[in-house]
Length: 474
Picture (cartoon, rainbow, N blue to C red):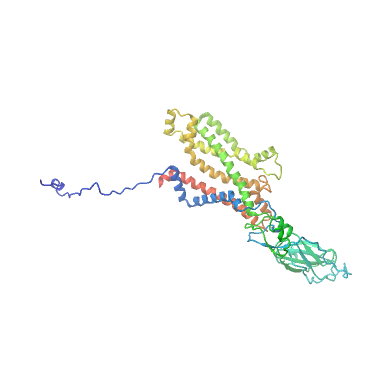
């Protein structure tokens, strides 16, 4: 039999090769993703949101696990290291207890001059009597003829003139008293002491300066109390003792800044997370019921929400503190939580209500109603889960708002009060020493700023990742 082809019936049409069923066929398929898997992939593409998420996780680790590794009492005061800037580990020389010094008084020199002169020469022979330490600095000088006494000043920098001598420490009572002992908040830093002769009333405009850097020391009793030496080492005076390490420095009472930042994070994040969780949950239920039932009930519920929005937060914070008997100088954590929970839920309720008004008109809601589903089942099983995106975004924006509110109230003295640390109360304490010791303000303020910024950027990223309209454009 002669074989035929398609070209026999349709001239000019070329033959087509038969495609075998065994030839490989390339298939392109997209893996099946759930809604939340797709959200996570879209969120990871947003670098700002991803970095913010890592910062939030790092803050949680810093708050919860930090005290396990940095076991320093945040309330322990080290008066030898007051307002120390961040530095490496320091050491101190072990010394005995302080011994009283009577100073030097010259019995063969007149207490007052025979006549007061218009001008005198500057003091000579100014020097330290012994090695200057953070326990005491003892100065001696030669007596000055024509002077009736001496004034002593101390500065942290080299004086630029007579009106720039620094802190007045004290005076001597007579020209024959030629020594002075300084024990006022000494640190291991450079000081410039100035001696100015006086006529008993006014100062002569001449002065002598000496530069002194006290040696860091620690007494035996203090070293024992802090557990730095054992009983066998009590007699080893002069040995070097390694002091506690303060990587973030100390505050104005010598308390470790890093330990207080960790303790303050617990307070600030507790208020910033617990309060939003409670009032967002209440707002979700409130707004869900108002949006689903609608009608008169919706109008009544939303008018009450408008009334709550109009209530002044600070006024209620003050009233709650009075009602709970919290006086000045006492921490008002519970009144702050109560005020946030009672007054901050309407914003969430409005957002959820708007979403519910759209969702309740969907076909699957009508189908569930036809099958006999009760309103409670529809709200908690279908409607609220479909508003989870809005809820998460609202929560991420509510957390930084609550943290900032706590910081503001603690800063003005209405929130957390010392000695209980929080980032806001630490900022309030740091403002007092901002010019001389800026680290006491910079660190808590930086933690507040970074935390608020991270939650806000994370909220922006979640908004984009959960937006179905942006998903459809890709």
